[in-house]
Length: 335
Ligand code: KG4
Ligand code: ZN
Image 1: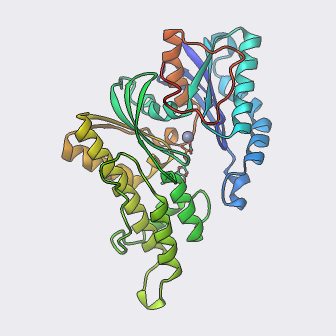
Image 2: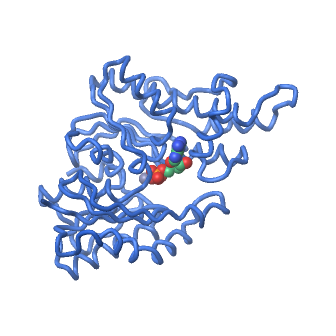
């Protein structure tokens, strides 16, 4: 039995976990910095790195508590993409532990963590599959041929889906983070009330959410009292437009790539309307869809441990001098 300590500090969650054999979560500690960033309406990078520094030792201590270091076979960490100051804290912690405890170090791409987060619920899930990462920083459609073998099919040309949720929530005065706020108020709204544009970008697997965000802005600014439109209607209609776009792109990609297995990951996958619509798509198109459980949608270290296990099996280890990569992409990662 292989137990891997995993560390995740790409953005505003300081997280550590111990995962056994790539899917059994022994501990999963997440210290969320949301209360610190909330009053600024978004993540402040300088504050994030300082918070990581303050929290990291205690988060790792709690994650390791159920097993102890003597039980650990390797340390995995998120090498990127992410905020440079935040990444440095996680990488420094991982490298220091490996140096002191003489353990192998495993560098994981944060996005492949999201792609394989469903594995923590479905241990038998294996590539190849069509993957969609929808988070605050990314909206990427990826053909996953194997661990470490990724082909980027499409990505957002502007805002990520989660970023659009956050920006629209801000302009509607719903607070931060926007995704959960929009989902909550949408329950009281009519998703069909306003026909916001669906940016399908015909002939491409790319996404674009900034026009939709602008459409919501002008609609909200120019609304008239007599229209009897509530903020809940606008939120629900916006959410509907994002969900429709994501689902339609997945349908198209699955059909044209002839892939029946689909895996989602990232914070936006916590959205229950998206989960419902994906389930409907799966039924209609006879697709097998794997969604991570809610705690593994948002940033966490267990998903990094799930991927690190496979690199451990292949003995793909990183040097202790490895540098963090804030702009790490899929094409520079295939191995
Ligand atoms: O994966 P994640 O924790 O961090 C990144 O790697 O970016 O995703 C955070 C993003 C935020 O933009 C947040 O608003 C969005 O996920 N999010 C949601 C929901 N919960 C979080 N978006 C829609 N509906 C939700 N329930
Ligand atoms: Zn993430």
